[in-house]
Amino acid sequence: MDVIWQGLKEGFLLIIAMDPEIVQITLLSIQVSVSALLLAAIIGIPLGTVLALKEFPGRKALLNITYTFMGLPPVLAGLLVFLFLSTSGPLGYFQLMFTPTAMIIAQVLLGFPIVCGLTARAVMAQPQEVFDTAATLGATRRQASWAIIRESRMGIIAALTTALGRLIAEVGAVMMVGGNIKGETRVLTTSIVLETRMGNDSAALAIGMVLLLIAFLIMLLILTLEKRTFNDERRIQII
Amino acid sequence: MMSAEFRLFNISKRYGQREVLNIDNLEIGGGRIYCILGPNGAGKTTLFRIMSLLTINDTGKLNVLGDEVTWQKNQVVRLRRKMAMVTQTSFMFEGSVYYNVAYGLRVRNTPAAEEKRIVNESLELLGMMDFINQPARNLSGGERQKVAIARALAVKPRVLFLDEPTSNIDPASALDIERYIQYINKEMGTTIIMVTHNLFQARRLSEEIFFMWEGKIIEKGETQNLFENARDKRTRSFLIGETVF
Image (cartoon, rainbow over all chains, first blue to last red; front, side):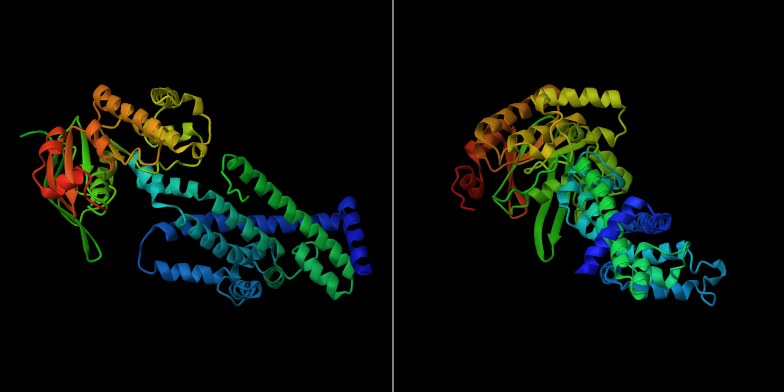
């Protein structure tokens, strides 16, 4: 109990003191996870929409693969990226191992199936009426597809928040391809692992608090945007 | 040859083993209010969807507004832009009443000032100006239906399809909407093709009726004449309310 109490106190002090090392680690964590989320969104949202709307051979298989990869273990994602980026790997020439870029690539691998799969679900949940209404009002196929995406945006935002939650909290992939190098690839989650291994449980807990605070602030930002977008949304009232 | 807005020749549609539509020959002229009547499962909705280019027919030739339909992408959009539809549920996009009414204009890249003028004009016609900034999905059934009609009118369609436009609303609102339908037809010259289960409404509004049974049009004619002198026993039975669904 003392460790937890000590950890909470230290965490509070860390946040107040703005320790330069913690600030650097925190900024790198945000940079890696938010970049990975953006890339996952850029690839995942259009692909999820295509999987939901287009009929083509292998579509169901692709959807099932995407759903399976939503549960991809971070360590396995890390291993795959490691095999590709290590000096003997096919992309070893670029010398990306143990850099934030490698960490972003590994996190894209984790975040992309979540964004893609949940976007596909959100789009498929839309009624036929969305297309019919848009089409009978003169929309082209592209414009009608955009209307469907627009109607699905609550589900797409849920996909983004779910993916971000997974990325900011994962440790296995970034540890494997980043190496937890101080000042270069150390992020909040790998710091927690390091401090715990060194027996500094309260310090680990303190960094965990910072991580939670960051996650909360990013989610708050997304939810605020969501509220702004959906301020006209009707909610089910259970009385 | 008489000009017709729609010409259907040997049009059929199957869903699995079941043939839901089989039209030998059908011509629908222009400028009037036409009504498609028939019991549930008669194929009214399928016919409606094929004519409004939302469903592709399996066989036959379809001529819409003077064009032989090839289902080529550009042709479909060009023809759809001359028509509009109001459905039974009046689906509303997420957003304000303004956004919904402006949608058809935006997809046509209408300039902003023009868009605003037309939206205001359409909502005023339907008596819905007070709702312009309200979330469309918070409206009542009758209000939604009026917004859906305003939305359809904003694009100035040559043909307006109405799929049971008053089935979910109270009698007062239904009468209101009937008045608008007549106004749109008489004053704006829009051809109206509607499906309704309300025989009184069909009699009040339409000038010509197509009666459907098991995917076929078994009788057609001027409304008054059909109500009084239907030749087919099934039509007579339906029109006097004997058919049990």
